[in-house]
Length: 77
Image (cartoon, one colour):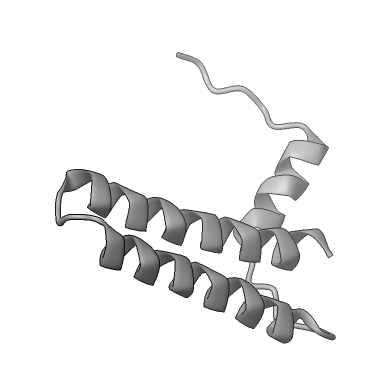
């Protein structure tokens, strides 16, 4: 498959997604709220479900949701 050239908007979005964004303003506090909520949810899942592949998948998806939420803050403000 031949390579296609990225548009300027696509290139800017890609750069934004793969660039470190130092926290500013109240972002650190909001990251902490999200991280704490994800931790509590993951703890509840571990406490209430048997060890199995579904439990592992649930924890992985909580981690993904936490990272994506934090990325929403970092990359879109």
